[in-house]
Length: 122
Image (cartoon, rainbow, N blue to C red):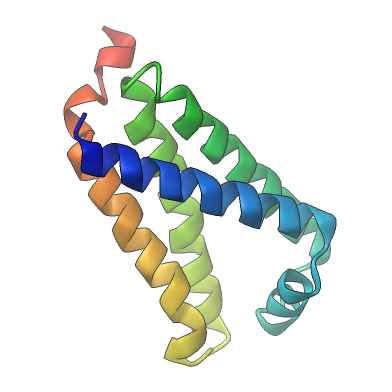
């Protein structure tokens, strides 16, 4: 695992812990986002929990490198869902950009750790 991969992994862990906790806690920003994209608030809580699970898997990746790609895939699927949700309600690019940027960062992390994807099952 390269230093860049570890730094990227760490930044994503920090973001998804922060984001997941704030979604579950009902921070005004996330309440407003979910109102804008017309999704129910129980789904905000579920999304926050999914993000915390993904962050936990990335943390496990510090000791078991094969977990990094799987955690990133888990989070990537949620970010693709976020992009779809924003496009569905015709949000402007400025509101969709963060989801796109995080999808790109996650894709980079997956590609950097792809060689370990199947070692978990070997």
